[in-house]
Image (cartoon, rainbow, N blue to C red; front, side, top):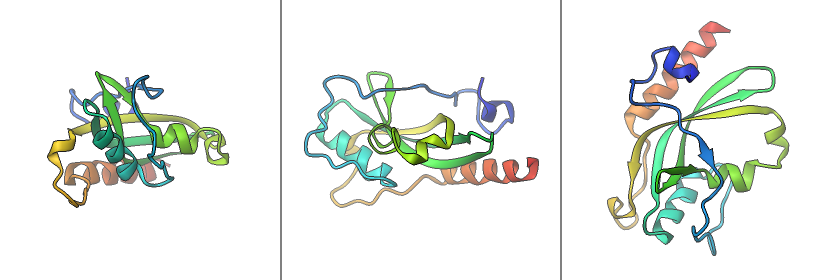
Length: 143
């Protein structure tokens, strides 16, 4: 089980999910995937692909020296398969990736494209922000 779960940061139903490559049939044409733009990257995918959902949660980055940091993050899912185009197209193969030992994904909320109004800005849910801060606080105490 996941580090976060063992430290009681997450409820029993908030389990770690595995990230797969972007499933076949997901249309990425015309979508510019940018670094540090997970929200807009994932939102563009749900706008262009009818059955795809946007997932809000926390990722736990564990570096090659076993240091860890929680970060609020957004990725996608399609028919139960979770995928992260930001990681796949921006991080993989980069210098930054060489410092990352593993990334663990913990979902909290899912959204469909019809849940967003025109020009509505996405804001992380307070729950996600609080979990990120609590994890990072606990990690800094443990080190």
